[in-house]
Length: 270
Image (tube, rainbow, N blue to C red; front, side, top):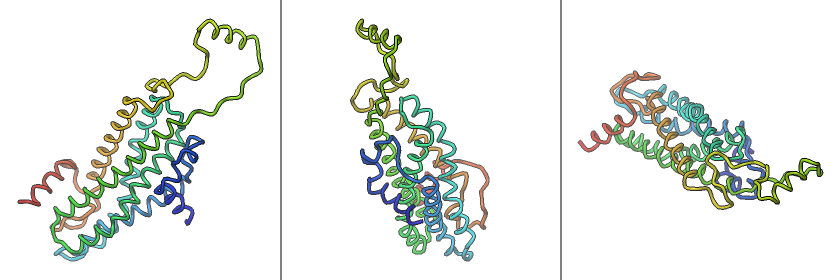
């Protein structure tokens, strides 16, 4: 388990995403260990969220703490399952050379950053959980913590994708001269375009940084990831536990995440 934390520490310090470390076109981390660590840290923050239910007026609800600890890692893993196909397609469209396995390791690293920030803020959430009785305040506090953690995690993803795009591909060994290569050399002398790997459908043709279009595509995907994650959290609710309701693993399907946040914000100042 120690090497799992070592991998996460390398990611947080930027050692795993420096140009030399990315030379092979992938983030050098153990996906299995990183997933296990993501689940463990997610359970820590989920338990901190559920602490609010331990001090409600109707008596403590230990099951809410357990449910939040179980559902928080599921929130991230299910969001990853739902959004990973779209990221892979976007990645292929812009001509990235990342394989599916490399892209999965990169996305797990980004989620590792997100969950590590969440777990580090968990004690603060637990402190407010035991020191306030305002349910709307706790909802908004958790939304802000998720927003800050998600922003850092997705910024890590975007910057790492940018660094990977600047790494030139490894040169392939030149084949022995054959009649066909002689014809190609003649074609090059005549001004014809040489055969070889062409840029991706939306790839920036040139040696400079990725085009604004490429950055826009990944930013759109990040917004999509945030929307799916927010609604996934709404589907898996409750996490904090409503004070005037008995414990339940899930709630009925109604409304949406953004409407609930607005109502919580309005009731906080009413």
